[in-house]
Image (tube, rainbow, N blue to C red):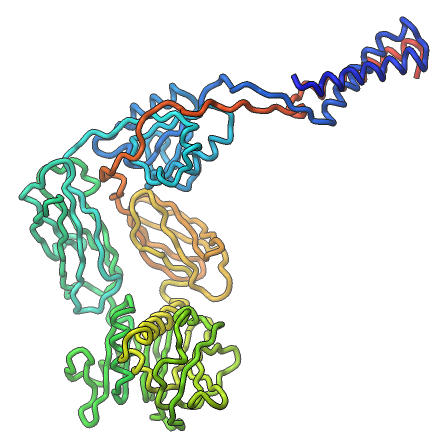
Length: 605
């Protein structure tokens, strides 16, 4: 017991005795109200001081942190026995991902796509109850856990049995292709738990149509990487979900056999560069766009008296085909004359590069470039000596419109006034960047830091221009169109202004429901969905497709990072505060009531 409690009780008795025996001199008649007052004042004094007492470790049921990741239910896993053991040991709390300690979905099956212990163990360690961790040992964050926190818990490991399996661990490729182009996908297949079999094939399908089928040959580590070039001819424009499936003997876990890839087949390429006429700047820009853009890139150059030619192989292209590509592009880049190419386009970004062909004046000289630190493109030039790069050859005088930002300025021979040469505007639907300078190809040609700056500038400009609102996708778009089982679908804000809540409707073959996207400070919103393929429609306009595949990395056996043992740190003694003792409030009230009744019977107020 805290000695302060004894002091408070003694003081309460002394004050009560002084009142009834000293001031009011009631003698033996005042013993009952005196005792009641002493009890009441002692209780009130303890509550006012909020006296605390040590509390021994709780002898109740332990907190059992049960690994609810999908690996517990994978081939060779022992989820049922783990769940039964956890319920016998104590009060069960689930861990694995960001959904807290409660089961997600069906509480009789593990559904979490990760095996993260830290959040649940940190919360459990704050209590004074014993903590038990029950897992298969395949955890993601053991190395990040403080040793003293991990020592606080007893570890019980039920490892998975070894089951031979074939797992298609990755499938990657372009998110968008132009109609007629090949869809080049790369797959990685692993043989798990046994020597690699010889009868393994991987096939790629669109719906019921098989696009390509390839045999699989494994290396000494049991890993194979296969390229799957599939023709897009015969696939209609729009979003298509491709399925890659591995087949063969010794395949114990069927949920690792199939991976999904969402590709959009477009009638027009995503990035279209039109140069009239062609020059060194157009060539350097086209090469950089091919390297940094994640969309298909097409380039067209006008050759005098010969019309348009493709920049890939200089084959002839009709004027109608060039204009059709310009109208369908997501990002339209116009180098030189742009007459007639901006009308009727649906591009989110327009990158114009005037060079006097449309009547603008030109100013030749040695124009040294400087970067503005406040523009959206400033990150491309951080730490780079831009003003020491090769000078540009000429500029076109431009006047930035109201609300525009300036990324680069130029100064002739490093003397005189600085003139804006790269400016950008955003009207909410279409973003525009104008480059009023020629000769930046020297940066790319020279190599070194100037080439790095040129590529970084092209990448940053492309990213910013494509960041405008897509009239088809709407104000939010999925970060990844296909996610693994047990992982959330993340949407990022792509509309104008700060993020706001958006309603979303989802439909699949088996379910139709609505939800709300609530964006965090980084402009992202998470949506947890069961396995399936979904068409979504945003309340503010825009639609698309997302999918949650049956595959999860949790189904593929990983290294066991945690071994079983008892707790290495005794459960700490806790503290209990007086205001946690609800009964003490009742004692104070009853004692005051008893004193009042006793005084009334004695004829006192």
